[in-house]
Length: 77
Image (cartoon, rainbow, N blue to C red; front, side):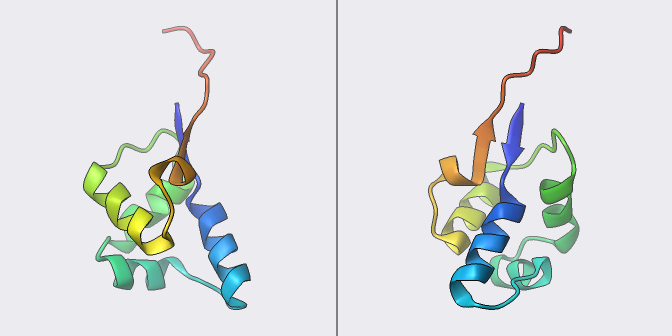
């Protein structure tokens, strides 16, 4: 399973800039709908596009490996 680290990146950016960074702010800066950002942050297994990943990487100035990580899924199909 892929896990997105959006909440952690929001917290890190907020800490570095000594302020609160909101999903609304990210939405306005990236052009990604607020609902999509909320789903990425809160919904397990959410499926998104590479365009959205690209915009988030550019906004947070991180490589894709810091935005998402692969977790072993031990569940059997």
